[in-house]
Image 1 (cartoon, one colour):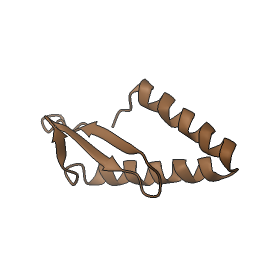
Image 2 (tube, one colour):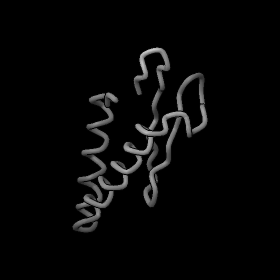
Image 3 (cartoon, one colour):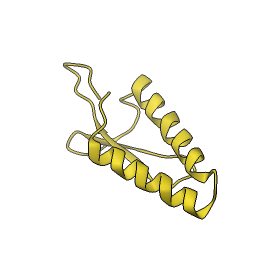
Length: 77
């Protein structure tokens, strides 16, 4: 699984925003994102295609989604 650098920047920005508003909330955000990423890695076809081959997994407890593609030939996410 590879993560775009833009997505990493978005995650860092969200972490900082949540930590600014409540200490420890950024950590909980990262934990929820990590749970979703692990679930996607094991079950990449679970979430519906929302546009062409793009899929979206919503993060539990936070208003964020993970957008991803599955390349079946190479088994990459």
